[in-house]
Image (cartoon, rainbow, N blue to C red; front, side):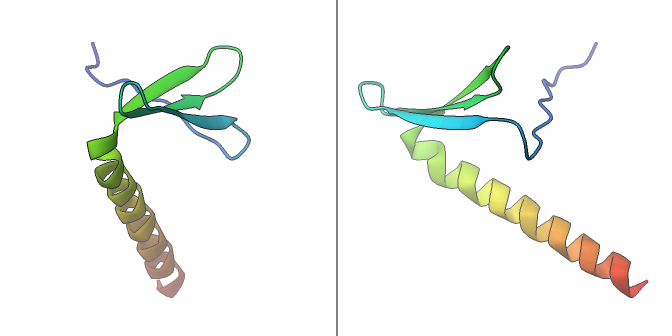
Amino acid sequence: MRDVVQVHITADLPIRSRALPFADRVEIRLGKAFPVALIVDSAALGQLGDAIAEGRTELEQAKQQEGRG
């Protein structure tokens, strides 16, 4: 059994966010019919943003290296 939940996000998947100020969090909803909600503490928002930016940079670098091959 896998111990990781995977959600495949595509360009056409609706993504909505809203602040939850009473909880000092942000809710990020993915999808429509069966949405998944990611609840992020405000203290972790920078870390999440950094992780996404780092992954994007690595992906772009890999694509550039592929083109050189």
